[in-house]
Image 1 (cartoon, one colour):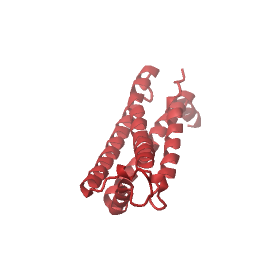
Image 2: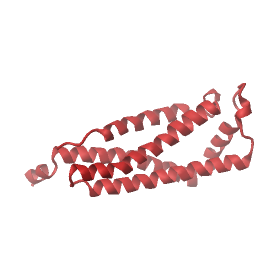
Image 3: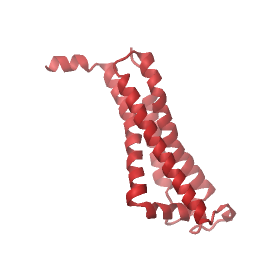
Image 4: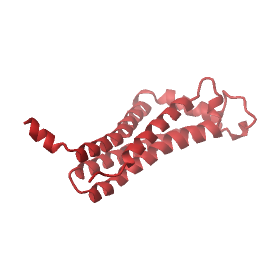
Amino acid sequence: MRGEFIMVLNERKVDRLLKIFTVLMPTSFTFFVIIDNIFFAWDDNFQFVKHVMSMDTVNSVVDWRNFDSPMIWKTAYTLLICFETATFFIGVYALIRLLRALNKDNDAFFKAKLWGYLTFIFTLLIWFFGFIDIGGEWFKMWLSPSWNGQPIAMWLSILFSVLLVIFHQPERD
């Protein structure tokens, strides 16, 4: 039995399983973020969006950039959740495609990786572009003593970038 398992689990398959696992991580993380945002911490996370966008906890010469409209805050928060949900479903589809291509040739697996790349693109759009660029720099979130999400966004961006580098490694023959 042990010999059969080793024969089935060769280097190429282990390499591919690792790549599939790299897509599973942002997909599962996004799932938990969505559940938290919708069912458990809606108001807490909405308050985060509200305070970042209104810039009411930072002293900045660029406070003209703020948005003081509850409708805009709700729209932004809803769009964020929709984008996170899209990211999750893209990740699930990527996982299905990658698992189906697990035992196929390199070309088939490479084609299946497209959806994995999209998962990483969407994940980085949320955490790097959304939180670091827009939240951090446009709304000066990093100046807020109580609503600074930049450190965790940076850690997540670095983590997902490292996973993307692993995912991008060429296929073994």
